[in-house]
Length: 200
Image (cartoon, rainbow, N blue to C red; front, top):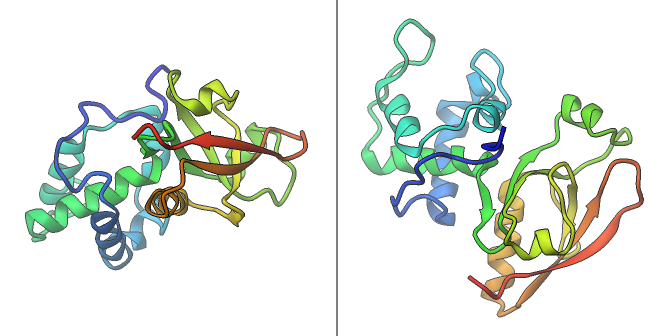
């Protein structure tokens, strides 16, 4: 259980965590993968990659190999994508549940009805769930916990990990040293939490 929200043997491939590569991977995902795995990786005809990554951590190289070679005996075919395109897809898949940013030290995933029920969230709650948190991060020091929901960041509502990534990157680009999160825990009222992003 200690592996929740984490990927094993983190790759040094430059596409991982690169916003441009993630965006390219998202475009490829929409045309080639979403039909089976769902637009947010939550599954359909193909397996739920978000939940699998949380409970059965995947290596970046393992994802790359699966995309290129497919899975024999299943509906997952091999692809003819270039290596660069494949790594962009890996970067997107990882962004679904991988660390939102090294600075925040959080792993996030979209809210599903099952997750909302397990966390005792009021009906209609939107945001992204903290699936993992680095003990040494400022977020941990501020009291955030696995299972908390980030409702908004910098005043903007979020529903996907990619939106959190974009907001953090935008704040850093603007020279900000912190971001303001609106966080909800269970049925408790929402609360604002400022998180330092200057340590990256």
